Length: 297
View 1 (cartoon, helix red, strand yellow):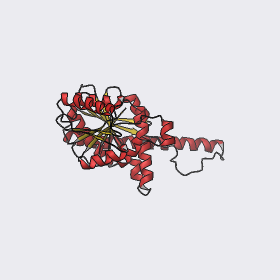
View 2 (cartoon, rainbow, N blue to C red):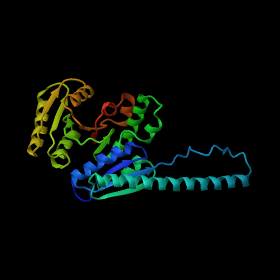
View 3 (spheres, rainbow, N blue to C red):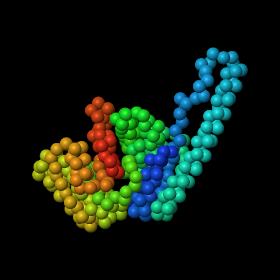
View 4 (tube, rainbow, N blue to C red):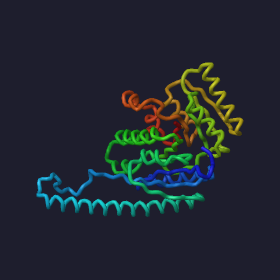
């Protein structure tokens, strides 16, 4: 994650009020990185949404052709309306980002599925910003919080697994990050994360708290020392903690106690099948986290 001109910050937005939060965090990241910002709005087709007419085929050939022609025209009109609504929506977010200090802000609209579209677009992207809630959550307010939480976890997991770039997931009103924490486990993903933070202007001049959870051991202390030395050499203030216990509980408690307002952690290290059978610690943490979380792969 560097500040090369071609390496833009990409904000994934839908037409929900959560997109304002995404826009604000994306503008902050682009400003810190001195990078271009692009808003991506993916229009998803919903073939299950229809007019309510009987489309069973139990009609004459002529009538069937007329029906198909009418449905095609209606679909074309819906698509055109969705594009126009999206254009107006994106222009509003562009103006919001420019007002927040974005210096090179572009917009893009695509038809398709979010994870696939992002995988196609990620070349030349340094970081992706998306909301952990969106239109589905907004329309599903009557559902239980637990059900909505599961849906959020599935959507984020699908996107994160499809990509190879850091993804900043946000949930609430923008608050400029002042205290950052890396949930460090000594593995290759979080080691790369430490090196990325050390080399990037994104968190420059901010204290970066290093947290390891689990049993204290000589190897854990050695890994934590490497991470602290790497960040200190880059000029960061680096408080460190090695706290026994369950990672989810330890991280949540430390976030509260240390007033952390942005968390960095590795994401979805196990296969999708293992996550399906045994659950995912990443999704559990995302459901319980109330702060922006930068996910590393």
